Length: 300
Image (cartoon, rainbow, N blue to C red; front, side, top):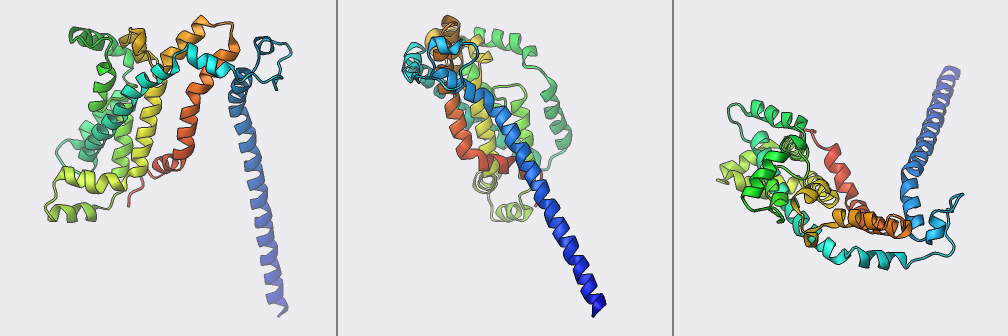
C-alpha cells in the first residue's frame, strides 16, 4: 500500500508541476501579446489622438497625449475638404467588382489545378507560382501602352480587367490567391466530387455547388485581401486615373494631405476615416480569415 501511495504522490507532484508550468507559460504568452499589441496599437492611438487636437496641440512639445479640449470638428471639415462621398463612391465602383471577378477567376483556375487531372498540370502550376517573383514595374510600360491604345486611360477598366484573369491589385496577389484556393480545394473529400460526376454534374456545377460552398473560409480570405488591396491601392489609380473626379480614397487622402501639410489634426482625421472601414471589416471577418489561412493545405 505504501508503494502505491508513494507512486500516487509522485504522480500528483508531477501533475501539479506541469499545471504550474503551463500557467506560467500562459502568463508569459499573455504578457508578450499585451506588449506587442501595445506596440502595434500605439501609432493608431496617436493618429486618433492627433485627429481630435487643435493645431497648436498637434505640434506641442512635449507631446500631448490626451487633448483638451477635444475637437471633433476636424472630422466633418476633413470629409468636406477631401470630398469623401465622391472618393468613397469611386473606390467602391472598382473595388467591389474586382472582389467578385477575383473570386471567380481564381476559383476556376484553382479548381483546374486541384481537382481536374490533365497532363503537365504540376508544371504549369509551378510556372504560375514563378510569376510571384515578377515585379509589377516590369509590366507597367507595356500595360500602359496597351491600355492607352485601347482608350482605357481615365477609366476603371485597367483596374478591373486584370481581376478577370486572376491578377488582382498587386502582381503577387493573383498567383497567391490561386495557390491558397488550390491548397484548400485539395482538402475537400474526393468522394463528394466523384459522386457528383456520377450523377452527371458538370465541372462548373461541381465548382459552384459543392467546392465553393465548402471553401467559404478561403474565399472570404481572398475576398478580404482583394478588397484591402483595392481600398489601399495608390499606385494604379495614380497611373491610370488622371481625372480628379475619378480619384479613389487613397488618392484623395494624398492630395488632401499634400495641400494641408501644416494641418495635422485634419490630416489625421482623414486618415482615421479611411482606415476605419478596413478595421471594422476585419473585426467582423477575422474568424473566417484566420480559419481560411490555418486550414489551407490540410487534406481531408
